[in-house]
Image (cartoon, rainbow, N blue to C red):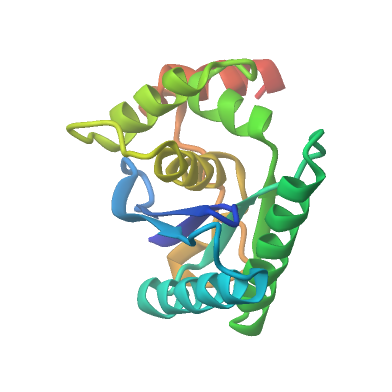
Length: 191
């Protein structure tokens, strides 16, 4: 079984979702959380708070792989800079623990979870709820986004087998055990 930690980076809200990927079984949510920092805090205080929070979560859950949303350009440079700074902290914390980091784009996550790269946020959230068998959509959106990143890594990434980091487990389930989104993705890839 592999444990995957998904991180939706942000300076005000950082979403973290942990899922277990039992081989040949459905995914199971272990934990979901959103770390927050008040906008009135100095940037150094905010980054230190997030660093400590992520370090604690990495030590608590001991993931085999970390899936991080790739920073993309926006018109708001301040938002991009804060997100990039947080991403750097997350990458460094994972590297210090020997945890491989996978970078996923928002459209890649949408395609993996819903079968369509242009899916709306509500569609992704509903699929996260359904895939993980949750009673409700995780709130706020950063929580659901972090879980979607972990799901994407479980289905498309190099998820380690048996908790051994860096080993490709071939984590894509057999066609009969796949969700419609997974089947659509496999068909699109010609597998």
